[in-house]
Image 1 (cartoon, rainbow, N blue to C red):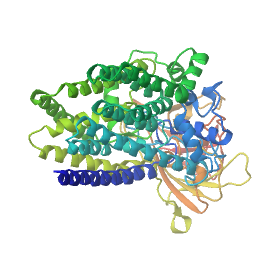
Image 2: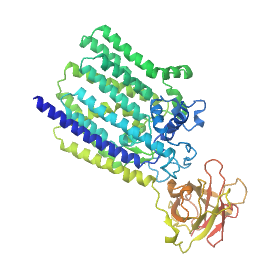
Image 3: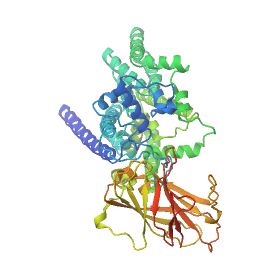
Image 4: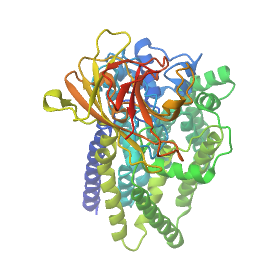
Length: 609
């Protein structure tokens, strides 16, 4: 019997190790294919880390809206303090100036087709970008801690069901959102890891007689969770009821209960208490949640419960970038099928189970944690829109265990295997089918291998602070079929002659030249417009290589109900959307269809066919 038990443990550990290797590989693939700062709040999280690495102190909260860290200055600092030690050896002096924000970024637009990038990328493998990638490795380690903690929690809850523990790990490992967040800079990785580990240790103490060493270790890990993020405080709502249960049911002495309670309080006071005490003195509240909400954006309307729960579900399973890269709809349907089987399995298991008193107590503790955590999240969601799946990740241990237990109760495992295999295919493919296309520009063509289109007219652009005309736009007549609701497709061929330094935006205006009276500030002639960056935001002008050609297309939708028998024009130009709104100079030879603007000489006017 002992030999069989040892063999089973060895087999389980081998399987867990295999899963962990798979997790690390997948997390690195997601991380590698996500450019720096292209994950929710990564830019702001790293701003705190870079400041701590340079100064050795946390940033001031005097004017958080004017600083690159924004609301992160109010977050508990453990993740930032630990990450600063990783970022310190790197030169982060190019942050944030070397990573200008994309003024046309489609933040939160899940079906956006362009400008998915939050910042403009020129070189993602030097300076602060390297520091970001190094800190991401730390996040991957924290994700591994989460998975191991889920395994430990499952073994503590169901000691004789190692296959359930492995299935719980597999379910989380196949969640593409977990892999994605685990591979980026986010304090959610820290609170998820320490909260899940705390829960596993707490249940383990319930299953085994508590000792001073175990309680002290639990107290430290709980304090680390609290110092990672305010949501980490939720675990404290369980600790003292569990100690009372141990006193009442396990007959440990009240002196030991008081001693263990004092150890938990003391560990919190020494490790995390200073931060919460500081919040109370500065802001008049314990967690600074109100300050975080105000620095983000307070709600002005009542939450749309159905809509936000839908967004919560989607972003729990897979909503990448700045909430603007969604998985195929079929993937979410696949996860809903899995959820349906889980619910059926859980209900079937509850009906057939004959739980002991101790098992019911463990179930009550896990359920209490879920209820308290969701209630705290919902309260925060009343102040600011927080329907983001990663904010529920500290619940992953409970959710994964419940899911694995429910699936294990089904009479047939075939549907489960098919569903997990389908989800796994999506998880493995998303870095290549979603992330790479979203951020990778088309290759620049050497000018020696390219010929301008036959109808193209060369228009030269010059940056106002330079004497060189570094850019040629080979403009061609737009394509339009003159039918209602059809886009005007404007083909652009940018030829780079020398390096440009400005992060110029491209504007395309649908104009009525008869209304253009050359009056400054009068824009009545602009009937429709689109503003973007080259290659849909993927290739800013400073990333153009001299001697190369970039092919691009802009689609402009004209206003509805226009007179299709009239002559219309499109106006093209470059301007600084980052604040100055200055335009780049234009020079060229007029053509019958393409001319330099008469009233706006910093633009090109194309006659529509």
